[in-house]
Image (cartoon, rainbow, N blue to C red; front, side, top):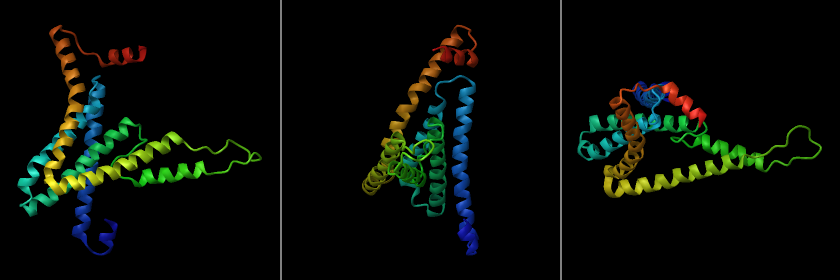
Length: 213
């Protein structure tokens, strides 16, 4: 955005800004859904955002082939939709991992890999004061696996899109729906069970029960 502004390309700068706002909106949506569910003691607080992401991917896969001929609408709409989905996904993983992992970019992962490698190859002299420098091998291997998954997923995604087009997102969307539906269904069953017995759902009591366990 800053580069486009410096070059006087205001329209492109505004386009990039809108895409960023779509990403932020996706992350904000995840935060709203998770906090809403947690305040109500629901076990599906992550599954709600995951289901929304899956439904949007499903929509993209089903409608993409029909809308691609509408260039003026399809291209900007696709960019905004995918940015919104990336915001959803990144925020879900950020919340699940307690801000340890990001899944929509690799620069942070590569940086962390470099830091841990630097620690691993650091020579700790016995004469040095303080705690020895030690690499977090679990973190290093986790980030290496994530970068590997990025690469494999990128290659498979490109090959699938080349062969079957936008429908390539459908299997992934269905898999995400399968993962999300189970905890949501459990919450619905619990709510129905409480409703039939006239019991008011108490999130605080549920939290205390979890702590006792």
